[in-house]
Length: 401
Image (cartoon, rainbow, N blue to C red; front, side, top):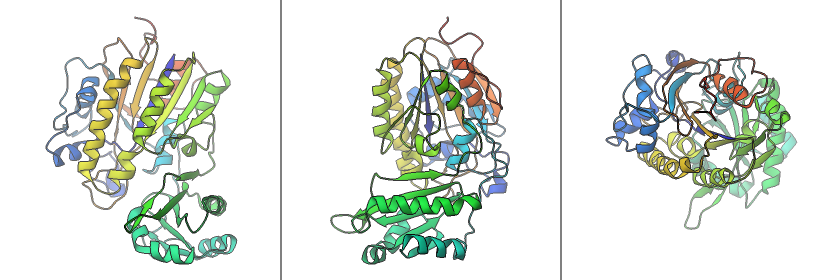
């Protein structure tokens, strides 16, 4: 039995009830992407029941081009986040069983965004100057300050609407391992401030001019205050496998194996390879990052729609690889409406699709708390229940029909 849990990074499905508190009233990632491109063509996701989800939500907007189906192939629903925040760590950790109250610290949208004593100590311990020190979109600030950073060997430090301290550097000037060490220093300094993530953002000069990020990003999360659901699963003998940035997001806790993937297409290839392996009991957790990293933050609805189509096509090839006792869980960790103002995540409901081969789906309703995922995984593999949430696993065991 293999369970594949795939996080479609930032694929929200409508503003959460508290969206206004985050400045996100009216956000709806999937629906607004669909409107921006004249409709989405997602036959596999539609068949699973994606288009059935909005009707479950108060004031849910339909997804143009992806209407409801009469007999969905998956169990379908939506989840509402209850932790404070709308960032990657908060969303993933809540799905793995935690509730963050209070949420992580956000840096003010002012200059400097970081406390002067934090910046001074970071510069002292790394021996390099810190540029930027403000809210910024990643590629934009590299274009703005890349020349100076390359000339001087300085770090470009910036934040966003998420709880992050991001560090960019030209790795043809400053070695990658030195950047990682600087991130470890920043992580230590940021722990007392309850900052969610420190992120290494290496870049280099492009041929022909300008700069580009490399595939060597690394995330350094805040120390988890509680165990994740993966830990009891691993102790019970389940092969817990992380794909892409998942191991970084969860600080590696509870995973037997971590498989690198630089982007969505590579993560999909890795997931396919694992599907063909012989583990008897395995949980594979993957993050498809491109929706968020390449299109949400850069406010590119056309690119976002193309990424959705590519993943839909991939799902058409992947689903036949699942055995009769396997399962696929599709979720998201937050929204990132590319038609919305700013360049930050958006506080939204997220879709929930549970595909069990050979089983017809039904509504799972709206789940109050992402931690229902952890409770479901615990029940699925027969380990003691996670401390929060309610399982949405169908009463009939997945391997029986």
